[in-house]
Image (cartoon, rainbow, N blue to C red):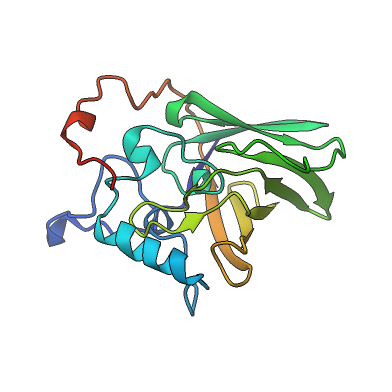
Length: 217
């Protein structure tokens, strides 16, 4: 089981504004954190991210209990469990009890996939790195507060490397010519979770907020 890196400052002495009951990483809020020159937006994507950021997370899919999708699943605070077989890697996602399949049997990516939250993924090994390519994603959000977009045109490449027993690095490259002028890459850190198991978590259970949210414009 793995969890995302928590890099959001939390100091109760400062009023605890960033302190929550679950760890939240800064890249959950803005996946481009750390990129020197920011994301290479197409003009429409820059305008959309600015609009979403101004409205905060009100229209984010996860705010409405929809899946996080790929690659945002790597920045969500809920646990992920990796089940590895010779020809298949299954990632069980605690958030909404969802899953992702990565096929390791050499099959190609589909040429004309039906868009889905987690897309279609195939993987192969390059040394100690599992290289996973994904297409067939939906138009959705890459992060929470920044509202950076990803579109159906995107191809995502992840390089999973287990640096040591407790640490995993995911080098993530997004090639989405519809939303960005060139591919861009960030590194995400994941930490092992010991001595516990996954719990049922369904966002809609006892949910009472949706009726009070403004409608998306």
